[in-house]
Length: 96
Picture 1: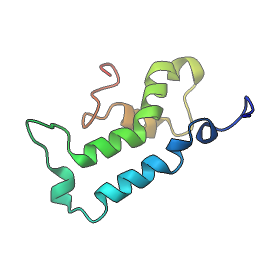
Picture 2: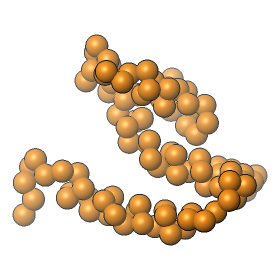
Picture 3: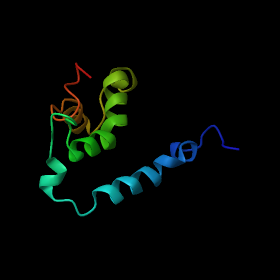
Picture 4: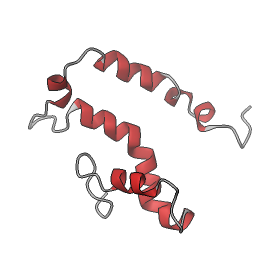
């Protein structure tokens, strides 16, 4: 039985190694051209999808709850702000 203070990787073990392993297996050895390829049918490139997956949880938490949870900001606020305001894969912070 899991404790209430168990880390998220124990609650959702697939996020510990499985998803990372699947991403590596599918993208390892790809060229920059392949990673950056976009099409009208699939839209986002593989690189953009991986970036979105890697930063999505932090971005969502920061955009939705950052002001409440961290009213004075975090020590690395500018870096998080840059991720949240990224025009590349998820719109601006005001338009999630």
